[in-house]
Image (cartoon, rainbow, N blue to C red; front, side, top):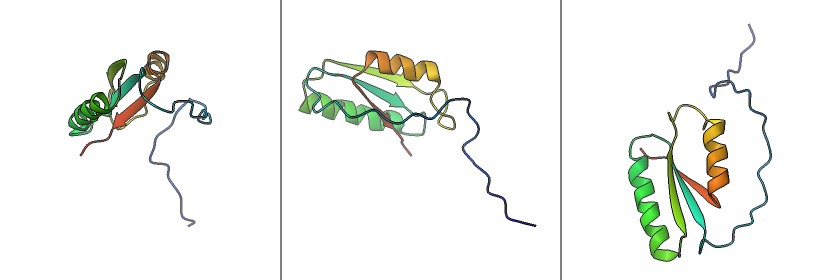
Length: 95
């Protein structure tokens, strides 16, 4: 019997797209999204990131969001909402 490679990431109906060219070269005046992955301590990681961002840059606004579960990709609606509201999004892993 031949070995079988299984994909542990699950299945998705989404189409893969290349990342866009980076256009943000600083965070002054930008809206920053902080996406909680829901892993243990990811909220603490993002709290610390938010504090550092506010100390180092003149952030316009911080938008906090939360994935339903760390085990799945971010829902399309959530990704679209963050893309519409934010100049840049950072996610916290945790553990």
